[in-house]
Amino acid sequence: MSSIVIYFSRSGENYFGGELKNIEKGNTEVIAEYIQELDGADLFKVEPAVEYPADYMECIDVAQKEQQADARPEIRETLESIAEYDTVYIGFPNWWGTLPMPMFTQLEQLDFAGKSVKPFVTHEGSGFGSSLKDLDRLCKGAKIKKGLSVPGAKVYDARQTVKSWISD
Image (cartoon, rainbow, N blue to C red; front, top):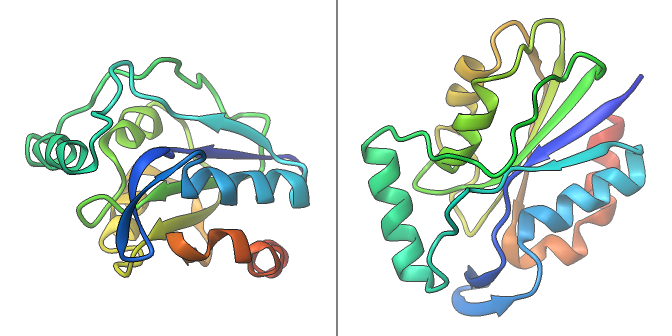
C-alpha cells in the first residue's frame, strides 16, 4: 500500500498562537513531514505560481479575494496522477473557512476513484470549517476518512497525535 501527502503550506509571517510571527516552516508542512516520516508517504507540495504577499494581512486579503472569485490560481507544478497510491493525505491551513484556492486548482485535476483520503488541517481555532464538504466535492469516488485538526501553535507537539491518527 502506498501513500502520498498533497499539501499547501505557507512560511513567513503567519498568525501563530494568537500573534503574528515569522515562521521558517509552514505549520501544515510540519504535519506533512511527520506523515512522511511515520507512514513513508511521498510528499507533493502545492505552490502558487505567484507567491502570496509576505505580509500576513495582505496575504489573507488576496486569499479572501481569490475565494470570493472562486479563482483557480496557477500553480508551479501539477501532480498529474495519483494512480499508484491507495491513500492520499490532503493537508492545508484553513483559509477563510476552507482550503486555499491553489489546492482546488490541483485537486480538481486528479482522479480520486477508489482512493482513501485522509484530510488534515492546521488552524488557529476554526478547525476544518467547510473544507470537508469541499473535499467531498473535489475527491469524487474517494472514501473520505476521519480528519485531523491541529492548531498551528501546537504542530511541534503533535507528532504522537499524528501517529495515532495515521493508524486509525
